[in-house]
Length: 469
Image (cartoon, rainbow, N blue to C red; front, side, top):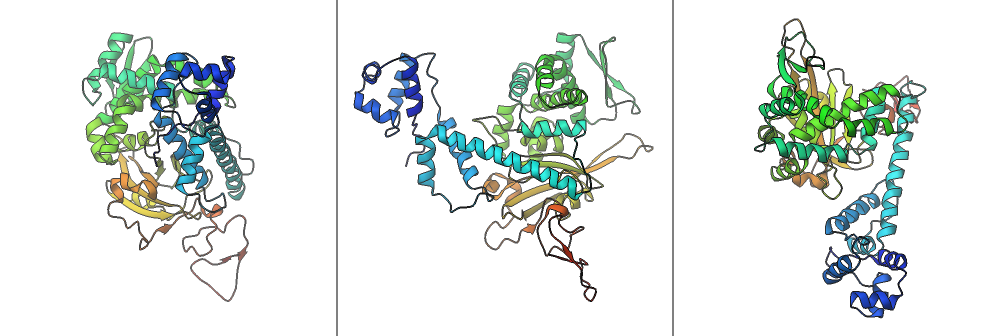
């Protein structure tokens, strides 16, 4: 069966109504019979390539052709929604799924939107449960949490900035890598700003508007230097975009709006150094080999991982990844998921996640096959990293980053090559956090789940001193 048929009955009817045409009149304009047009309008027949061309010619301005990418994107989104373990019911076969998505596009889009709303509402419930279980009480958001949530609800993709950054990167980069010299030249030529080195005791980046000078800490490695310079360039060249987004986004405090502008400049800096089209193409070709991407684009391991989690452009999406960064204490300091996996907002994360082990083993890549309580399996890669401080008197920053995808995309993830994905695989049973995990038999449990009683038997002592009721 072809997966590229386009049914557009409702769109054709709406177009005919807008032009106040009878079926016979529109059929004559399209060069087809009235009965053929009636079949198209009732989604009994798809649009042919010739008809799509005729529609674009005869109804220019009123008809926007729908490409194959839009159709396949809708099918993929609908398949994901209907496969959600939280929605009971038998699986739907591929033939039925494709036909429904093609013949009832408006209804399919509504179902996808409803599923998105359902997931968001479920996550809001989880946030409140997480807060109450952790003893937080009122889960009021701090300003930086408002910004983190803003990026999450935006799908970690900001189209206007991403496209502007891609154009800027194309203007200044001679090859695949945006060099530091190219960034310097653009700042000087367009904005009259020079880049200077600052002592290791100075802030990482400091911009003097009066002196038209950007001072960059001398202890920064080359990839971090390029990032902070790109941040400043983005903040100057895309100020209007960032200001409009920050000050028109509802529900944010004033402090959060200021922080959002900084976050948007960081986002744009990553998009300048790793422009969407080229980065997505090379990532797919390299099967998301992070070290290889670092070499080709001159970015850090963390930057390369984080950028992969932002490849969510409609019609040109990358592999859905989750990305997180944890510090030595287990705090999640960055998080985003384009997968079904979500993270704890309060308290610690699951101790069985490989990212915690990676913190203690810098510069070594660890791989894990894991399964969440809903039965979904993920392949995760984690690496411990150390950011030097430039001085013995200042401790280096130690943390780990993790990147993962669902097993359905594992063939596109080089780190899954030596992981057994079949029935013989032995996934690690992970959860969101102990307070939210329903598993009754976990030896790593630190706390009982919030919604179940802890049963204590004074005559029995096991690894966990209680049973989960």
